[in-house]
Length: 324
Image (cartoon, rainbow, N blue to C red; front, side, top):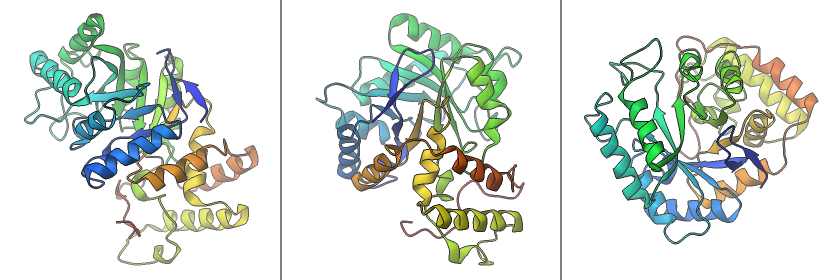
């Protein structure tokens, strides 16, 4: 497994990392999650990302890493748990971090991120007391924790294409996890999010490379199904993508993963594996390396068929997938 620098953190991470959501009870039994984590480590994955909001993910990861040497890089987040969450209460936030350390079995966190600092209340969390400079108790606490050695590096974990760049440009954070906005067919992060992160020398972690299931498997026979409700531009785009995959004789998931690491500014891409065999398949894909330039050029033409997400399009896939 090749490694890349995680921006200015000084950390080096495997090109493929493990996202923690599906090793939780969302993906299956605890034993299954632990086996998936162990297989990832065996195959060279050295970075695991999680969050208190990912059900029992921190607990599963903590148990899986007990006695493991060397320990992988682990990131977690502030946000959503325990409920009701108090984003402007510094003492509450410290207790959340202390709980993460306890269940993860760690003396310190390699990376602590703010979970969705780019989405405001009431649906999400109102992190900031100063929205001009993006300051608030959460930033004060993270700086304190870093001074105390309980947190080594500070990061952002978000999902918006245009609200995140001003937070990035404060220069207060060392790495960025961006999800839902940078994948084979959904590329809005290219406009502002990724350029801002590159300007700041941040490590870039890409989440949801399979776009919440949209790119998890081919569904040729569902594109015209009225029950799916796919809009015409997206149907045409998927047909073009599938036709091109047939032409180059490569599977969808492999192309989706390799497309992400073809960007040299990306530090690592998170896989949402729930089984050891999923890890093996994803590692095999990543180890084939970046896609050839001519393939990248053809895929850009297909992506440009729908350059922005249609307003009524769901984030989660409408397709009926074999594993769901």
